Amino acid sequence: MQDAAIQAEGLRKSYGNVQALAGIDLEAPAGTILGLLGPNGAGKTTAVRILTTLLPPDGGTARVAGLDVVRDAAALRSQIGLAGQYAAVDENLNGRENLEMVGRLYHMGRAASLTRADELLERFDLTDAARRLVRTYSGGMRRRLDLAAALVARPPVLFLDEPTTGLDPRSRIGLWETIEARVAAGTTVLLTTQYLDEADRLADRIAVIDHGQVIAEGTSDELKDRVGGERLEVTLDDPGHRETAIAALAPMVEDRPRCDGTLVELPISHRRGAIAEAVRRLDSAGVGIDDIAVHRPTLDDVFLELTGHTAEEVAEEDGGQRESDRREEEQRAA
Amino acid sequence: MSSLAYTISDTVVLAKRNLLRIPRAPDLLLSFTVQPIMFVLLFVYVFGGAIATPGFEDYTDFLMPGIVAQTMSFGGFVTALALSEDLRKGLIDRFRSLPMSRSAVLAGRTLADVATNVISLIIMVGVGLAVGFRFHSNPIEVIAGVGLMLLFGYAFSWIFAYCGLVASSGESAQAIGFIVIFPITFISSAFVPVDSMPSWLQPIAENNPFTTVVDAMRALWVDAPAGNDVWGAVLWSVGLIAVFAPLSVARYRRAVSA
Image (tube, rainbow over all chains, first blue to last red; front, side):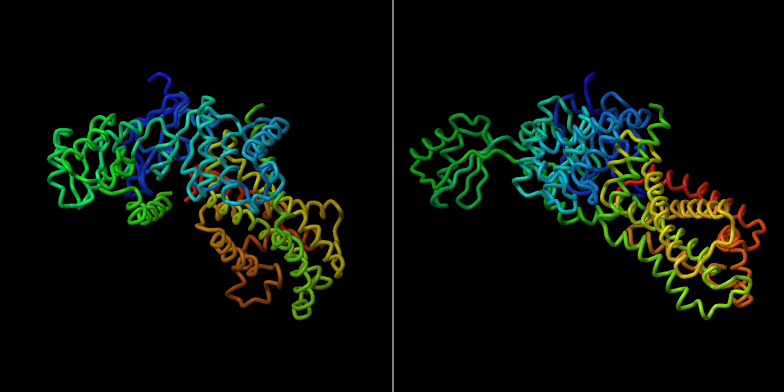
């Protein structure tokens, strides 16, 4: 695609024996959000580091804002903003000094840097804390300042590596709104997250990453369709009515409904009228129901379907271990 | 602006960042001010009476060049601490993603050390003069001595920069620095005449570059015989910078936060 702001082909990276990226392709058209979704240690941060010129890939190519991440690294750095997993701000400076410093390092000049710093402090609701040392800031305030620092030079492409990890729900929603506003203004964003609702809410397209590979790619809806679209869930008032209920609902679906106790699940292709039709059929068959609802699959279902485990399971069970292995390897390799 | 002009302005921006933190971190301020005073007083009053220094008017004249050189060599420990902290907190990632000079983070950091070394130097010499130290050389030599000390301190800042980038934490960076530098400064002519050491230790102390630097300082400040020590000291300092500055910058260019 001609106007892709982020385009990667076959990116590979290993740390010693640990393969962090096993050849991934990514593409984000200008002015869209690409979500990289995956558990800890899946390779998301490595991908961000390659695309932001911090790490050379072992193989493959990537272009950001039309510039090659290896050959044109120096020129590319003026086109990107990065907000990493940690709020990368100087604790011993105040908020305004932090943003001024970043502006100066983008070579914006002192006056322009200060004007921009004040503008961003205002927008991120940090004006009152502008002259307070960052070490007195709350976690949410640091994240906002970090994101503000990434926006200082109004970069056309923004990389946000798990920007809301560790934030309280209110700060999280605030950050989401800021990101959406940037994209509405034309910025392209690559966002990594292990939160399914975050990818669902923000990303135009989602690449699901596991073990250094893209295992699925598409819009949130496309991914959900891959796990079978919508289901009608009926809770019966009496498990004894199950067979009657299944027989009554059978004409509505091609596959046999799934059952579990009083719960009957039917895959449906059309949401419209499904509940009304099911209620009519069950009623005329004399089956009573406690509850009936159309269930849209979540990205959690997608992850489970694609990998055989949920995102949280991996993060908790072996993600931490894999992450620490990776870091060890990384240090040894360096 | 040319790329050299950018390098200079980036370096100044980062040096300023490093200096701004000092008045805000009282423990750091103490290490640049109170600690040198304490060392001068301890050595003069606790050890001074027991150490014979033939050829010098008194122990204070013998001690000052040595203890100033030692303080300068440790002045850069903040660099190790600060760089390792920047690395851990992801700031190095941010700096490396900015369109700034590749050497400015380290150059700004080590330049800030020069400024704090100037402060320590002024305080130490002031305290020294108060407890009986006197320059026995001409003003040009005194100023040359100051220049040598700042150059020598700058060289050690680059060693600490490398430690800070390699070590896994600020504490271990400092530990590496101290374990290496502490013995080097003590097995030298800095605090006692080398003649007073056991004979097996004398050749080590005699050939220790730190001894060369201390002897050069004695030549420049209290008019002790110099030999080739002044040039030797300059060469050692420049040599250390020539090795550790490129090593550190190369390391920085590949550094990523763990």
